[in-house]
Length: 312
Image (cartoon, rainbow, N blue to C red; front, side, top):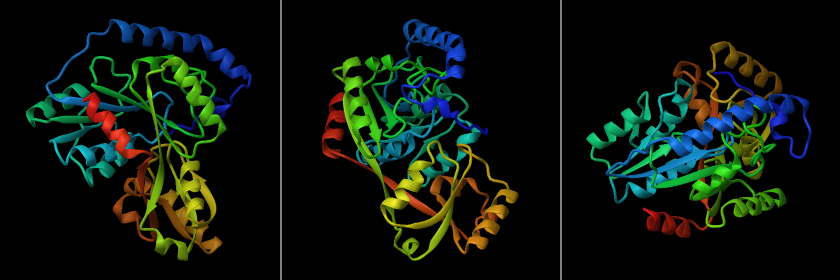
């Protein structure tokens, strides 16, 4: 699905006529969320369940955190990752499957049934906080340190799947990226909503990039927040001259890649993309395309996992 987020979604303290006109629809979403959260019967399971999700739509770093969690827990327990079978998220499935056992059924209920059959001990959900039928043992909400909660409004007037006030039902807020004044103000707002919620932070760290520093690139990406890719490259001084941006989970056609290769040739550059984007490209089209591997580094990681173990 091709989807560009409207720019007004991230305009903080800014009156926008479109947002104002969309508020009645947002109110319908708010009422629906309230009903589902308070009236839906919860299902319980024999294994422990962790859900890593978001309130802000797209680009909050859920998948790297899910991978980090799976790497930790599979050392001691039979661990599976569950992703709902969206065709737009095949890239994330492939990325996770390089290291972990992933269940990718049409519904989360079918995935849970398979996890039971496999005698799972820990199940980690990549997305699913808005699936109110599941009684998650631990609920983690991810935010990007630049976007945070956007304009603070619920879709379609803003980027939030549910009101920020729903943080009172969750256990952890995880903020990806560098912490600035806006992030600190956001943390204070979160603490007012839920004084007991735990807040942890992390950032993307590139891996095996020394060879990339010797070249110059035209970069391209189709991810939720494209700035995270360019910011990461800048942080390790990888040179690039232009950033071609595509919608989140974009499926690249041969014509797209041909145009990118021609543009890179004119600029005297090579092409560089994210690992997620690279896995979305057909193998026959990947020639002469570089990609950057990243991993998530969690601040106070020991404290983070100590808390998770206590909760589980």
